[in-house]
Length: 493
Image: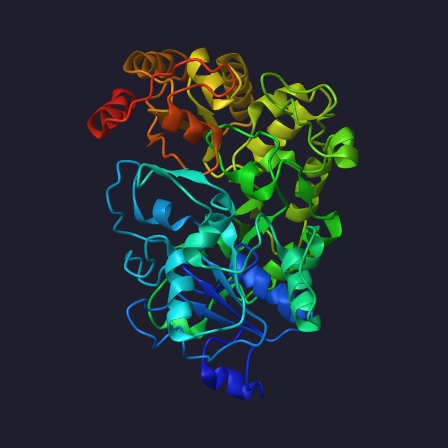
């Protein structure tokens, strides 16, 4: 069942007032891949009355006030993507398209959406109940942070939004506890996290709410409707990536029972064609194993799991995911299960027991023409600034992938994701990357993005200070937009 988005829907449910109203920069897709839908369904399952206002008009009160005022709190999210990243390219050009907006035009998500929505609520509802911030935009901006778009250090988003609370990271259990504390008149403190099965066992419609569907098609739905989340978090902790900052360095994976139950549910949808488009997480092959020391004591404060080399305490084993994929593809009605999330090839090569068997089955059963990998660069000096492994594992993985592909009699390819203009990267480095790609990878990479500084990452700190925070050495940082574009063109041609 969809959460209500209009007063008419609330009346049908017999609600005079919602306990919580969630406001989001995305359209309302009821899916376990959408943060607002997850938070709403978790709260509803806990017995709270939850309603949603998606992409409200910020120039009037027609949307923000249509449901009235909630009893416990307003919950605000900028959406699945930081609104500034959603609205602007790495060269600060306005994006024309938005995959999370009906019709696809980027006209509904304001810049700094969390701040705009919170201040809109304050404008139209004086002395209202608490305003709670959540989602990736708030999570990454929870402390003082360098903001690329204004080129200055901004204070915590809590102050600019004039909000009461901020739930950072993956906050399903935290927000339920917050609701219970507020309902009981208690002071919300020290509220912890969750596991994943409870979330995915909830009843999602996996569709765009009818109120918003009449506004047009939402492109993102095509990708997520028939996909499975198997885990979240990342122990890669790449310097440029916000995933570990938001989702955490500890991997939380779902049980086999929960995933198979959801896969069987997908197979019964009338419009399911037999293809599960993805079964994975931020990185597909981080499912089913974790560092026992980390689970007991938390992440190490002075070392990383995968860089500069893979920690020996992390016992990598692809066996559990291998067995899971076999079970999913054996479900009646499932023709193919693709692994589209991308792989960490250094992890795969480090698994001497099941790594090669896993890749062979990925090649035979779970690749849709192309398999994604993200080497990001080829030059050791740049990779070190990124917190990524060297080029040798990439070459070894590429050779193994094409051997298995040839043995299977298939015509499949690798899709390489690269980054241009990362702090420490020069034009010479990009020329070396272009040469390496032609010589070793036998391609000219098409998936090249210009580095975008996002709040709270080490790479953004490098960009802001022009200094390596680990060595305190001065660092070349390309800040000229035209020269950033040129770095990219060196590789893409």
